[in-house]
Image (cartoon, rainbow over all chains, first blue to last red; front, top):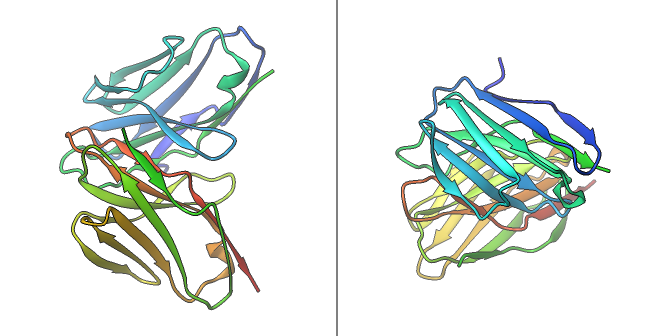
Length: 114
Length: 111
């Protein structure tokens, strides 16, 4: 009974292609996030949604477009993929308020751009 | 801006105690979290300190000094399974739940 699940787990694609990653949480949380982890393990926040509303957008290229159809889902679409987009993308969720510094992460989606 | 510093690598032996330090510079601060990540796995939450002092959870403890912008994670009775990366993360001000992560410390536990 996975709390935060994301698909696909692995993505291998060519430069210039468009791809999507889906995320769902069954914890009843209000807030969801996308983080990018590069090859040096640096975890950087990209976006956050609270109850379907975008609340954080960390100067990510506009080739990246998040979409939250409801508060349990947060998808990430990436257009015109570049080599530098290769990374592990983690979805996460939190109750929202009060903030306790605890995020629940999905297992990650490893994107390789060739 | 915000920045966090932690050692890149730490090595210790089974049964020992290890301390991973984290210093931070932030424009706003609610608290400091710690996460563990095994290779190929997801980050998992260990602890959160909003107030000064020590929080203990089993073999792991976390400390915060807000005046020194400093915290640490203390791991006792090290086990082989504790070999992983450990990240400190600052919860900034504003009600967004935004966590800014440090670069991570790779802990290697040797027999």
